[in-house]
Length: 447
Image 1 (cartoon, rainbow, N blue to C red):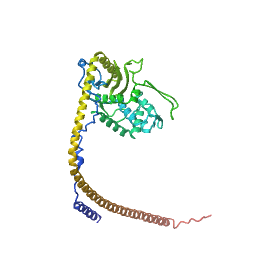
Image 2 (cartoon, rainbow, N blue to C red; image 1 turned 90 degrees about the vertical axis):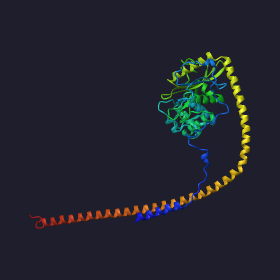
Image 3 (cartoon, rainbow, N blue to C red; image 1 turned 45 degrees about the vertical axis):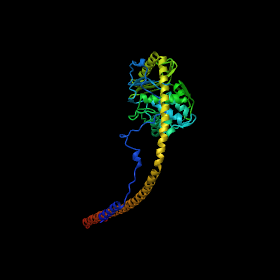
Image 4 (spheres, rainbow, N blue to C red; image 1 turned 120 degrees about the horizontal axis):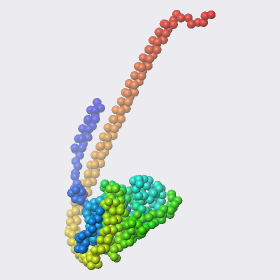
């Protein structure tokens, strides 16, 4: 009987659904959003390209062989490359990721802000990886965290800065990727703030040069951070001792095997998957240059590759080469200005044409709005019907379950009653047998 009722209700529900008219509206969002495979997202290119290729001086056509799988050297005054090797090949960046972490931290936080280290910031990094060894609940200023980020490459510090900027580490990684696209990067995706291995965390030598050039050129505090050799952290709320942080960049530290006098900043990186990665800045004969090394054998290999390229640039680039680069950059800026003016004129004519279409669009929007209102009404009605049916089925289900429980209890009681009757009859038989057995026996005391 119950099954017939349920089937009848389902039939009524289907009839109601088929009888309600639904008016489709034009989905204008389809004009703007298509699958990524069909229409890839185009990066927002900055007004002035930070890295330019295709104009390497002729006397630099025979560069040395470096161990790293990818590398790039750029003249930071003009942005033109002086050396290229697989610059669009994607690799894992390791801790040079922290340059982007520093950019977003410097642009969104104040140096005197206080950061409290969360449980996740401290305990989600790989055991044995580089760390500032902060405790959960410990408080450091943003400035102290940034020195821990750039000097000792603290992964816990990177997490804490990411949480302070974006609220969570995942949200911060998305902001990192968005910032890279904004700068003009075309092969970069970030998944964390520190650079520990993740299959979806990668970049290219070209993109890393764009990021590193932006940081050094536009943020004075970054230049200070990446060039500082030692930083002392006074006692905190959970640490009674002063911490002494030494820059991991051995090209800055006089007396080290890889010390390079012209080097004036940088960031090191290494994981087993990424190999040795290195971003460095140097002043070569009065010209500021930037070098990016990716997928070298190890940290030592990254240093050796960088020094080899810097020596090669010093020995081969002549003053007239830099002059040619300056002239080319000036020409590029002139062309860009002409294009910008042409774009303004084109935009003005397009605006006039758009104004003529506004009235028609307004009418279409009005009709679309009315149609959407009706659709909302239909959806609400359908929702109420569905809620009613769900409630009906739920109540009937509860009733059926309650009836089943009552039947089960009654059967259990009957089984137990039968067992008790059987036990009583068995006891009665045993008593009767005892009476018969001892009926003629006198149990009184006899002297």
